[in-house]
Amino acid sequence: MVDTIGPDIVAARDELDRYEAGTHPDQDAYHGLSSRQRVTRFAALTAEHRNALPGQLSSDGQSAINWAQIAIRLNLTNHQVHPHLRDPVLDRDLPVAAGSFVGTITGRIDDQPWRQQPITTQELSALMKCLSAACFVVISYLSGMRPGETLNLRRGCASQHPDTGQLLVNGRYGKGHGRAPRPEDGEHDPWARAWVVVRPVHQAIEILEQLSESPFLFPASLTGAHVRRPADHNARRTGDMTHDLQRLIDWVNTTFARTDGKPLIPTDPNGRIYPSRFRRTLAYFIVRRPRGLIAAALQYGHVSTTVTLSYSGKADTGWQDDVAVERLEAILEQNEQDHLLLAEGESVSGPAATAYQDQIQQTHRFAGRSVNRVRNVERLLAQVDPNIHHGDAMTCVYRPETAACRTARVNEGLPVDDGPLEAECQSGCLNLAYTDRDIQLLRERVSTLDAGAEDPLAPEPLRDRTRAQASQARSVIARHETTTTTDATS
Image (cartoon, rainbow, N blue to C red; front, side, top):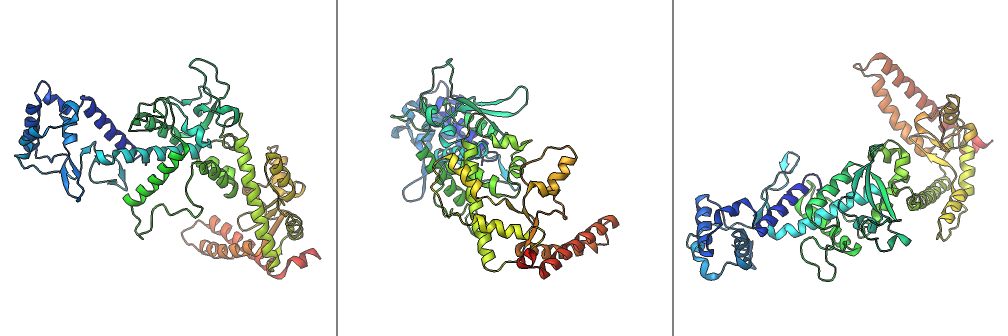
């Protein structure tokens, strides 16, 4: 929406603005002419170029001449074509377009124009709001900003750090005392701050700066004058952006279709999409995706997870708080599932099988607490976190003193984390356990490994390595089938 469709919407808005200001090149042909002469010449030029008249849909669904648009394009007084001036157009019996088109379509999706006809003036306002909502999604989600912080961004807020080259968005802290009125121009703002972002955020800001002349990226109104909240002095409200987000979803589902007939953006099972959900969604994926922080850093193009954790700016602990709350919820859900499966008879094997069972039994006693402070989250995390990490066809019951991955990094003089490093996991580690879920994944993997070991096109060293991996997986499966959690504790 931002990269492909956005420039076409901006171009349509720009062309309409030039028509309304009387500066469009097409209007040069009418300079110095009277109103009747302009209408007569317009009719002649339209017929000569075999163009259709600007149209609009009438109440009965038929195309009718859009006289207001003709008046704008001819730069007539009060943007009206008086009825006694219309004969030169009506006498020619010219075709009427289905809308009043502005701009051209240049954006392509799957090597096809995203629509066949240019944008009409009737739909331009709604499309501008959809584009603004799409830019809000990009900026809010990929920066970790709160809704109010995003909506109050000003023109010229995008910058680049002169030393590190990091892309920045300069805004204002939007919580607590940071909601105080902004100082006058030139005065020091103690609540100013910068967010580290990625290229798509800067691209969205660039589109928004072209979409309107307001000092705000998200003005109170993009098209009509706001009497109570003029766009020059007021940003869009969160409630209005909520409606814009729904408008964007509806437009996408109406304009584009999947081959199976299902909506491109399905209904969210958790209800309406509110602006506040994007920041928490980012925390959700960082915590719950495999290698969450690493995955987030790679996805957003950052060079380190430190940048990811400082999304909300150096002085803001709120982002880390959101991640901590999400981590607490994820751990509680994992504990509940692990305990339920153990109660239903799930087998666990491996050197850490006993520790796995003991940890699950101990942490499952959590009966629930009201979490109203960050310190409560940190305390509960210490109580309920069993330090069990479900990985790729194996489970780590992490203890630093027996972690092979940690020992290897210490011996090499490398920095160590306070958790497992799956990329450096070793099959002989004493922290490993295998649940029935892990064994099922291993069984599926063995088939793939066997096929690779017999691939005549693969180099022999690769086939030998694949054959060894399949043999190791079979050994783990065999031990699991002959060793239950009870056996492991004896």
